Image (cartoon, rainbow, N blue to C red; front, side, top):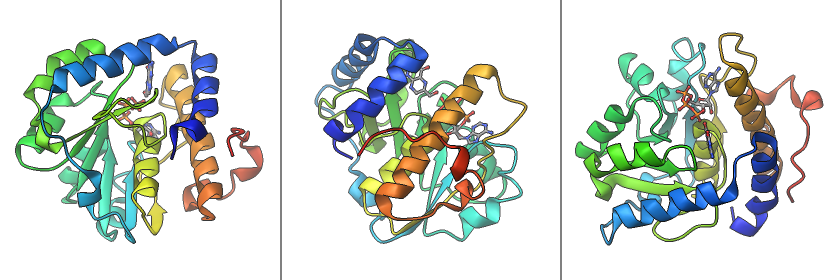
Length: 230
Ligand SMILES: Nc1ncnc2c1ncn2[C@@H]1O[C@H](COP(=O)(O)OP(=O)(O)OP(=O)(O)O)[C@@H](O)[C@H]1O
Ligand SMILES: Nc1nc2c(c(=O)[nH]1)N=C(CO)CN2
């Protein structure tokens, strides 16, 4: 995903949630500062090219669907889906997080040599400052939703889970499966439900761009408002 393609969609997200763009840019720039000239992880090394990739979400269905992750070539896990898959005995190849829940899991993964995609946005600068320095940057993939500023990149996407899907796409995944995704989860907060609606719209956009049909959207497509990107 090129930033110029992502940008109109990003602007619609900013508008909908009332996030100021300069907050995201400040977070990105702070992340650049925190990283200094440390080496970061190249996602080309994840083996996504040509792979069947499981993008695990943190919905209540995850444990029941853990086998679908185990069967994939590469497992990307969003935030707390990482701990839950590992508790089911499923190895996670990469965690995607904005550090708002299980930051210690991400730190331990980087220490053990498992990459973690760490996202900087306007509402997590304190988390970046607290947890970032404890991560082994050699296994950190730094991301932003604003314009990229190397080594902080933007592969597209918004919530932890859909960003994992955009990452898989960017690095050449052949097909994507989605264990643990529950868009109509009644247990989430109103804000989370709104984020999940955006995640659904973004996955719908992504499947169209890829010419793929994500099973997680079956039966839902007619009700999804298009995002309007190309
Ligand atoms: N029912 C669900 N509840 C929570 N997450 C879900 C659900 N269905 C899918 N997901 C995906 O799993 C991801 C991880 O969710 P989790 O609640 O662990 O982390 P989070 O840090 O709060 O996520 P985010 O910061 O992206 O909102 C979400 O970002 C979303 O993409
Ligand atoms: N500015 C801002 N950006 C985000 C936020 C958020 O709360 N604020 N939450 C996200 C996923 O939960 C992703 N991006």
